[in-house]
Length: 334
Image (cartoon, rainbow, N blue to C red):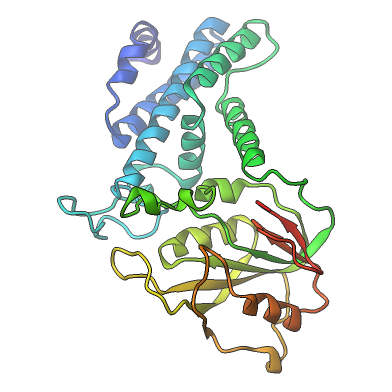
């Protein structure tokens, strides 16, 4: 069929075609067809109603893809990032391998956008579609993926403000950022041990996209991550404009949860932006520190003390802070 014939079929069977999308591969293939039709209707300067219909179909397809990608990642059928490949076992009985996003024709950015659109509550999504279409009909707006993504961002911002109900991000420029992100885990052994029972969590995309304080051209980032979240932590480091350098290990001396190993340590990641000098030799601690863990996610005072000793002149801020430390700025769930 030519573009005009495909457009007519799309117009008459839009809902049915969406219902036929059962997997990410099929959804991706269908999305490419809708995008081609969208290019054609714009080039041919078709009426606003037809352009509206095609744009809406594209956004609804992206929403379905976001739902399918999230479901696939939670089921360990799709990798969170383009690392690994179809030869990597997912460790789930009855399922052999993990596919990467690139192997199914989706970029990480597209995955993030699609899942953001999918995260919009159903009623809010439908209302936004109506409002955008009315704006197009009045020639004062356009129904676009970017517009729907903005709706998702506004919702996430509201949710983040509810989770971390403290003052705005402190003003100023900081050259040392310390953080213990509230990583979201998809799998736990029992409901009463879920991370969300301890404190509100965020997805890797939410952490990557969150508002940050002013960061100096030459800065140090010190970030906590558990072993299963190493890949996500490196993604956040990159998204925030830093370069990974090394890491230390906190041996918690108590065995925790885990599927491959029972976790007993956490990673203390070091990353820099621009040029930031390491500590002088006498302040270079051993890479492994041992101290029995206390309450959930509480980190040893040893690390704060080392930071203050090694970088006394740095303008410091702690993100996701539970308490404000003297000499530091803080943002988080205090």
